[in-house]
Length: 55
Ligand code: SF4
Image (tube, rainbow, N blue to C red):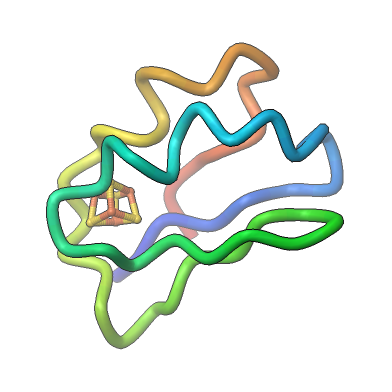
């Protein structure tokens, strides 16, 4: 399982530095590499838009 970023993402960048395994990459909408994500949930807790949830 991995976490996923929805279209609610406003590319604020809050999550990217919080991921302990560097699974998040920047873009118009940020993305989580499902192969790198360890499903810790850290990013979901910091997203101000609530755009990150478990896949
Ligand atoms: Fe990174 Fe954890 Fe979010 Fe997965 S759930 S992208 S490992 S912070």
